[in-house]
Length: 354
Image (cartoon, rainbow, N blue to C red):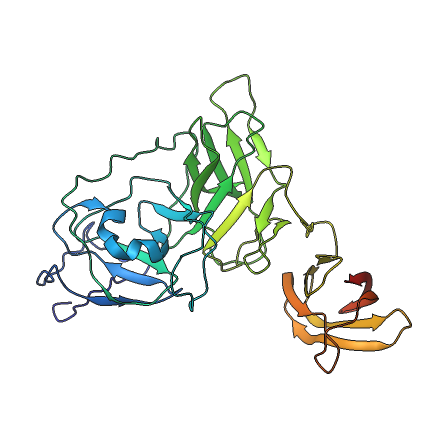
């Protein structure tokens, strides 16, 4: 590897059962500390760190930090909680709540590390900053009760705890009774971050277990929770499935949720908001691959719109449709019937347009 060089990091995949040394030695020259390279909007920017100074990753990001919302490291992940990630065309974060950075480990970066940095704006001239401040002393207790295998990639779970009950000491994520990730929980926490190694096999549900230090309190299994839909901004009552391919899941254990929260585990077809004056969101569970056709009829039975007619793959599906007729004109206020043909099933919902 003598002739390979980059300001980016590399992920090396080693063939199974290949005898290799514990450490991989690489040769090369140290990058100029002032090296400039781009960060791309909403992309996984695999970014090598080549400064001699060990420091907090937030200090190292410097002027780019206000435009960053997710940092993934081998030993920790940090997410900007309560920050509605803007689209790539947003010029700045002005007018957005600042959010709060939460991490599941000490967020320090040292020479030779690689992090994945995600920003909501292209940063064409990014360079690491030397802060000359001591590394972060933030720490969280090591997980003791749960054990799991670390794999190449993980998914980030931001978990809102049920603040009406005592906090557990630790929390684990499970797939088919196998722990795939865990984190410690402090007494005053209302939100924690957990790294879970879900794998790519589709279809298995993720459940959680809360472990309490007191022997008088049994472990609690959490199979009933809400998951934020980033498209609609609503929290849906459903479980996370392996193979969903999302890098961040905002999960809530809180029993009461504001606004409409469709239950994807128990209802075949959900629409919200209803009444509506603009677009309508829908969600449903499709057990097998099938053609999905959604049609809108007026109260007299006349077909006025056919916004969805396409084959879809099995799974928990969500979408958005405009309450407009075939000509693109907004539907007049009144009562309409929405018919959803999901494969061989036909479901009808009443929609009020105001």
